[in-house]
Length: 431
Image (tube, rainbow, N blue to C red):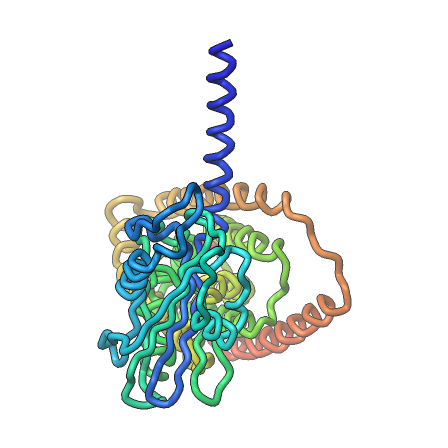
């Protein structure tokens, strides 16, 4: 009987822990508004109670003692002020006024700034039943700023051990304009709320460089492109074709013109892996340079969709400079490509000369690349087939026709350009 009781208690404890873990995941979100009114910036923020273990709210049984919670609430308010910082011109601001209150988990006042501000200003009833760690600390900070157009930034360092699991859902409301929403974590660092076009461009150039340098499938495709090429004209023609193609779909995707649905990203990733396999095999079998340019354009369109996934989550930080950020991200990708080529071309020459010389060596190199691409393709295909494909409704058909028209136009331009170029066949791997 004792064993049965122990097992029962252990099962109840496990269920309770599982429930608490599930609740934690649902509540790992802070909600906030930043509103500019004249020379004041207002930060209204809702933070889950479980983040304030060190505040030590007094309890009656399992509920917070509202009447005795004043000192603990002040400690929680100081913790919010320390962990969520507002900046003007990268200078941290200190609030001139602040207030806070406790709220029930069922409260919905943070659906708008006006409701949230009024809710924090209203006193809480002492008989409000808030279970420990199940509720919110709502705070309102008022900062003095130099002007309504001051350059503001925000940073959260709350619970850095949680990483991306703790998010700050923020809505920035500038004077006389619609609000902009963004979601940030402690890993984002300082995030500009109203960036200048130059700061937005600088950030997205860096993002583009980082994206191409960490995109190993894109880098492997780039290696496949240049293996059979000889001479600067051939290299520039192929790389320019790839650049134009992926820019086309990257910009289109940023304006939500790409096909939607859960099936499309794994489809794109599968085709990117297939493009590596095809190019590597073509390098082995023999290359026609004009065909290589056309195929590079075709696969470049698919790679552009892949680039867009690295951009989509970051466009929330573009402010009002969407186009500038798009072009800056694309410039960053091209800078990254140039950096890769500066390293890759001499390295490839050394490998051809000292490690894998001659045609046999190049075939071995391409076979290794094809094997890697094949493994990626099979893995991504297995993920793709588990996702249901959408039905072709009227909206999907319109998007498809628009892309086909754009591709036909781009293809016609490429054919016209390639036909005017005097491209000698590669002297490397030719069947």
